Amino acid sequence: MVSRTVLVARLDSVGDVLVQGPLVRAVAAGADRVVFLAGPAGAGAARLLPGVDEVWTWACPWILGDPPPVDADDLTVLTDRVRALAPDEAVVSTSFHQSPLPLALLLRTAGVPRISAISVDYPGSLLDVRHRVDDDLPEPERALSLARAAGFDLPAGDDGRLAVRRPLPPVAHGPSGPDLSPGYIVVHPGASVPARAWPAHRCAEAVEALADAGHRVLVTGGPGERALTAAVAGTRGVDLGGALGLAELAAVLDSAAAVVVGNTGPAHLAAAVGTPVVSLFSPVVPAARWAPYGVPTVLLGDQDAPCRSTRARECPVPGHPCLSSVTAADVVAAVEKLVSA
Image (cartoon, rainbow, N blue to C red; front, side):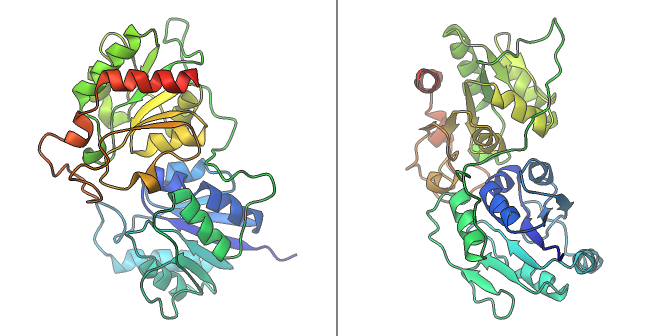
């Protein structure tokens, strides 16, 4: 029996990888083995995706926001590894502002016989399937449309939403530790891109206001965000900054009544576990493409602010008005709307 191996590539961050979930499940339904090529930041998310059999990690010099220099030896190592894998085909997923063609060239050099990608640029002989798509589609639908163009589709009964592997790991807490029984609110103040972060003092005000409204509040963040989460949690919230891996964070989000978060990876992780989201959304990228997908969501933030569609990493407008205009009362009202629904 011949085994069919498909290489799926998405080389950027956690959220970018999580929204590939429907694409991956479609490919997995038509393949015997799915190998996912991820960037360093997205590899952990790739391991959470149902349908992925193996994850490779590679720092891509034309995709990452903090790219490494181009290294001929590094390219050779990846090319040789792909050649040894000998996948039957590859599906290269990119965001609307990224080109799949450099990676397609590398894959073609490695002997991959069939390559599919979305490309606005003429691909020559680099792509067998050059898919064109409306860029206002939500990112999960955009990616799934690529899978379908490549000849893959979701299995019967798959609703096309985001998902993670289950069971999720238990989150350790002792008898004197925080109350992690379901029903709390999670506030995640950090963001991988500074322009997408709600100001820290606003996050702290929201924790106080949510506690005043009778909610248990957990504050989450990565290892480099411990000072931020401690300041935001104050004395009224539970500070979990730096305490959770990605799978443990998914478990915490899974038991939450709602999550308050900017346009960053944990927003998509919340969507992947089916938890409602209060989305503090800076319009530097379009909400139509990047808002949390498939879950009840309240979108906060001025979507017509001057920073709209700039893809800025640092806010280009003094005072960060698109998000600083959102108040703690706005967040409490949004949480109450989602919880009551």
